[in-house]
Length: 193
Length: 197
Image (cartoon, rainbow over all chains, first blue to last red; front, side, top):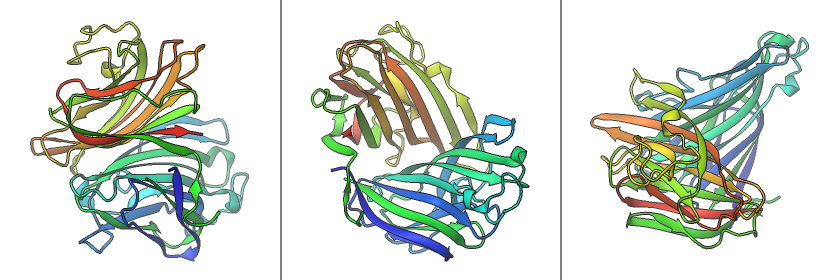
């Protein structure tokens, strides 16, 4: 059986989006499209809960690599974000960054707010496993502008990977902004048996 | 499109479960039915520490070229991070069975995961490899993989992300594939093969 759409939720100025993970699938994938925060420069993040830990604060170790290019003539670099919440160790127990966020900029050649969105996919492997930690990987592409000029309007493909340091089954996931609310975005959960 | 609806795209062809297995060989189901095949790895756990997770195809002696990019980080507030090309574990056309000092076992197998862990029960590898148009008889066969693994080294825990792309330099159809560690058994884990349509 191929990927099965489990549920879709549409955000409209909400604090968070949550999904229940019930262990039906060996792989689950969350596809988020056209995310924007209400507050400028606030990335979309996630955290999980497990069968005996009901709070969204599990230990996550992660890393990333990224590329960026601007709409002018600069950029074209490969790099990585070297700190939390994009790159964290499990003792942080922080929310993990997923999508870059641009909010309300409406001025300048690169500043059309409706275009300043981010989309991506986050996959978990064997979320129901009770022996191993939970591997995940994600990829995203976003548009961000510093001041609305072409030279500071950038595209960032970012790839993140890691594990949730829990041998228990994952039972839920929450998506929220680093600060503020999720202005818009479509969140779909898929399962692969 | 309603919730619960099946999205076409991946068709499950086979499921292979390791249990102290020397390797996992998939010798049927790779043909011209699909333009691409995906191999999904779930919690592959080796018997030996610090090994390579590798693959070969057909007669397991095919010329393979790879390019590996890797990121690793220590699970610590002083994370000992490193990222970049990992030429040490690139595979090269013309590799012989015993020609690569950085590998144990049969060096013609190409690495898609490095520094795998076995010390702790939680050590394992997950991810995906995609093989494009294996039944083609004109071109070399391209593939790309991305795996994530956690590996304990004494009291330290490492996270590794390995991205590998490459090609199998053959104009013969690829009809079989084998996965193994370069030393030691696959203690446990599951590999599912999907057809992409």
